[in-house]
Length: 445
Image 1: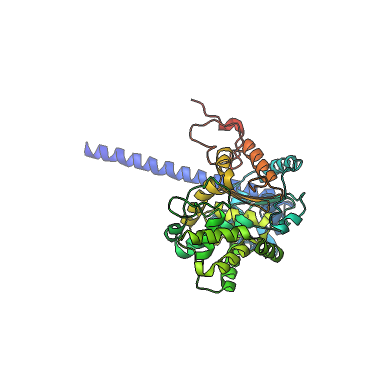
Image 2 (image 1 turned 45 degrees about the vertical axis):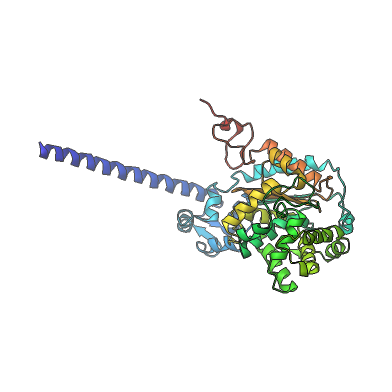
C-alpha cells in the first residue's frame, strides 16, 4: 500500500512539474512574441534594427522629453545609432526603466496624446472667459498682460504637455509657501515647525490679523504662517546664503530648471508691504513663538524675496509633480523631499491651500493645491501628475478665475479627485490612468 501511495505521489509531482514547465515555456514564448511585435513596430525599414530617431519619436509621442536620464538608458543597448533585436530584448526584459514602461503602455497616463487633446479643448473653452482683476495692491503685479493664460502638466513619469503662455514667467507669491514649509520641515523637523504654526484653515483672508487659540498662525499657507517659516529657516546664516539655499531648493524641485528672481516685484513688495510688516509686528506684540523679533526687517526681506522667485507653468508643473511623486523629481529621479514631509504638506494644501476658498475647493475639486495672487495655481494629483495654471486676473479671494474654472471642467470630465475612485462606486467620468472607458467603471452586482 505504501509503495502504491508513493508511486501515486511521484506521478502527481511529475505531472505538476511537467505542467509548470509547460506554463513557464508558454509565458516565455508569449513574452518573446510581444517583444518581437514591438520590435517590428519600430523597425520601420524592416532591416532588423530600430533607428534611435524612431525610438525617440515613439517616446515623445508618449509625452516624454529626451533628457540625460533616457539617453543613458538607450546608450546601454544601442550601437551606431541603432538597436538590434538582442539590444531591444535586453531593454524590454531588464530592470524596469522609463523606456520600457513607455513602450509597454505603463506610464502614468497611457493614452497621453488623447488625454492632452481633451485638456487642450478644456483650455480653449476656459480661455474664452476672463473675469476678475489684476492684484494691483502690489503695483508690479498690476503691470502684466491680463490676457496671459498658460497651462502645463507633468506626470510622475515625466510626461509633459503645455498650452498657451506656458513659458511666461510669473512670481510665485503664496505658492512659494508650501515650498518654504517643506524646506523648514526638512531642516528643523515637522514637530519643531508645528510648535510655532497650526494645522487648521483660518476661515479668514490670507492676510488677516488673526491667530488661533494657541497663539499661533493657523497654518503655514497664509501670510502669518509663511513669515514664521521664513523666520525659522537657517536664522543664524546670512541673508545671501539663506536665499541661495532656498533658490537652489526650488530649482531642484523643478528638475534643476533655471528659475528666476523678479527684482522689480521684490522691490514693489518691499515698498508697499505695509500689511505684511504690520502682520509681523502684530505677531511680535502677541509674543508669537518662532518669530525672531530682533530681526524683523531681515525676516520680512527674506519673505518678500521668497515670494518674488519666479518661474513659468512648465517649471511649476514639475514642482507639483515632485510632490505628486512623494518627493522624487520625475525629471531627474532624485529625491528632493522625504515622503513624510510631502504627506504633511499635501494634507495642509488640501485643507488650507486656496485661501478662504479652501473648503469650497476641497468639496468641488478634491485635490491638494496652492494659489498665488500673481494668478498661478499649482495642483497635485498624488501618484499621477502635477498641474500648473497661470492667468493673472484673480477673484476677490486672490485666486485665478480662469485657473479655478479650468480645474472645475477638468474634474467634471476626468476621475482625478482623490474621492472619485471609491470602492464599489459608479462613475461616468474617464480615468486617464487606465485605458478604461466610462462604461468600464460601472460596478454591477
